[in-house]
Image (cartoon, rainbow, N blue to C red; front, side, top):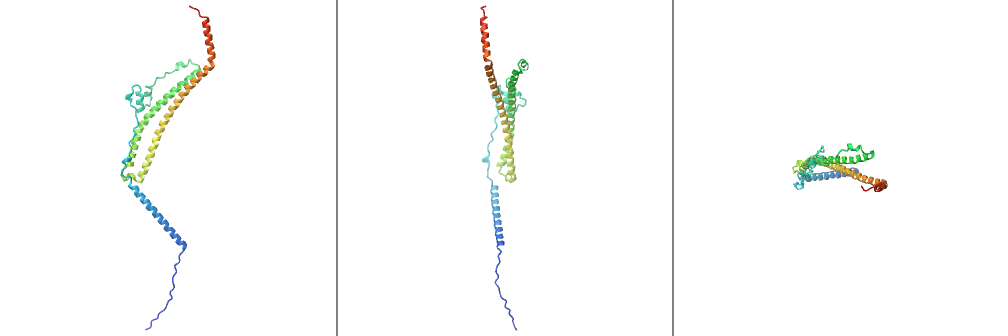
Length: 249
């Protein structure tokens, strides 16, 4: 029995590494690790957000009610004071507390055109002042009534923000509360702008009254400078004639 043995030569295998592929693999690994770190950080942030602040009742702020007039304290100004609280759309409460302004229709016909124009402008100043005061008082009353409704909305939003239930602090609920807060802020700005506009009207009416008063004073001074000497001479001449012609009765 014969056994045949064939000898096969053995060669060593050398590993072949592509530098470009290796760099690409390292870059992918780094990006994967970076994304994993970001996801873990986001997860930890979500866990912290879910924990909340616990009991938030310490953040609740008591409301400051808007002031109202007490009409019972004032006897003669009571009608308009009540109008400042509840509204005065027709101006009846305002007219009940102001000095009546007479109509000058019959008297104007006896004036010269220049004097009539001057008087009409002075009269217009009083009418403008009355209109601004009447509308401003009514607007103040409307803002007082609007304040209570706006305050109710603010308190409802405050209750939602301070509520400890998880459903009030989900992402959508938080965004809704932010939007509601912005809406309430704009409503408050509108109310403030309305009050400021009427305050400006009051200042404009007062400025016109002061301007007309100053203009009247200056006009009187100019007339005195222009006609004063002639008026004095006429007065002296008339007085002299009266003395010369005077006789003891």
